[in-house]
Length: 212
Image 1 (cartoon, rainbow, N blue to C red):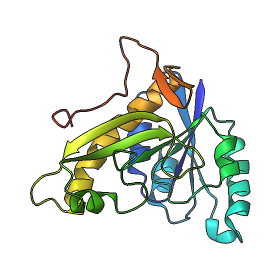
Image 2 (cartoon, rainbow, N blue to C red; image 1 turned 60 degrees about the horizontal axis):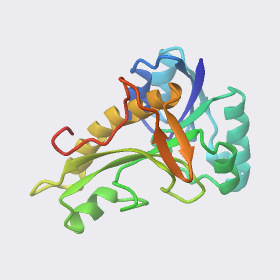
Image 3 (cartoon, rainbow, N blue to C red; image 1 turned 90 degrees about the horizontal axis):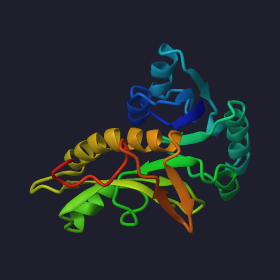
């Protein structure tokens, strides 16, 4: 059984989407937040999942927080660490610790629009499509080998909020599928790229605007 630890900072809607999906051969064993008021903690605890807090404000710097967070994560001996709306930049030593077994979802079609305000930046740039990317985490922010991407059209009159809502709906399908693929051993890393073992039930894949 592959053990999964999920990191959140808020309500954790992607965390909920993953926990509510069937994950053959895998189980979410803990949800950890860097904020004690993260709403997703109560949701997880109500479902019998260990809910822990490592408050970043309790540590003098990023490095000491990373050490404390890693100690809590390692207590669960995870096979996979999932960032689901975790709004803290993690240091290079931390990301190396979980290299090849830590996933993130970013609300843009990487490598475009790393960082924040992705939806407004896509609208301002005149993009015709936007979307999200599931990727393995590396020390470089919002980079790393791409597992899957999903696209939605940018509509006339879209606001950042309306576009974000449609992209989030795609994240809720794409991210659990990527986690299922990892748990099933369908994802391999070679030469900085993700390769998927072909099976009849392969999950994460590129979603077209029509499918999204």
